[in-house]
Length: 246
Image 1 (cartoon, rainbow, N blue to C red):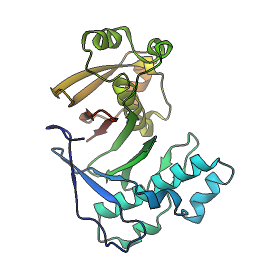
Image 2: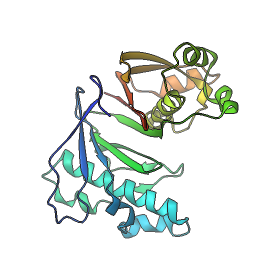
Image 3: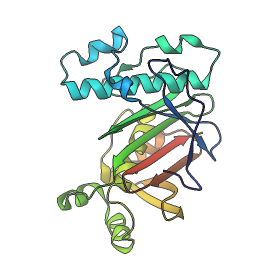
């Protein structure tokens, strides 16, 4: 899923005998560094840390597997940020009141999964105040969902540009919610955010957002006075969005 703006490249894999050897990805073209790790099949079945397992004791098997894969991938991404801290592999990532992953205080992180893939993104908090990642299948969206997810301007954009995936703006809004949550502490409505795309080529580009809901003033007051960076790319199978404040 490569594009000129959002380019991912395979980094050196861990030792072949490692039970959780991840497929490591480094997001090029961004400063500071954001590391993305795609969960391996082993990560889905490997039992997590004891503190984490308490959160999924009563969950169905599918939820348990996705939860474990996300935590293992996130720890791998954190380890890659600072190889001098080997104890990152034993660092639990618990769950907050809104089911958000709770990363160590010096790490900004986000986790996303959809059918067949799970990604975790991490960065140093002194470089990235918060970040959000989302991955979706590149599939058609049910017609009745458009009016509850996309603003009129966004629907008009999709109607004019027939090569954009139905799930692109949905994915972007999901990553924005995750990125903003540490500051606003609430998941606002899909229609509270207006997305503007800045395509780099047919399959990738940047994006920005504007809060437009009735609670926009309260939300804006809580956001940091930092630059916002949004990136997206897609192929025939998946749609990926990532954003952060720095």
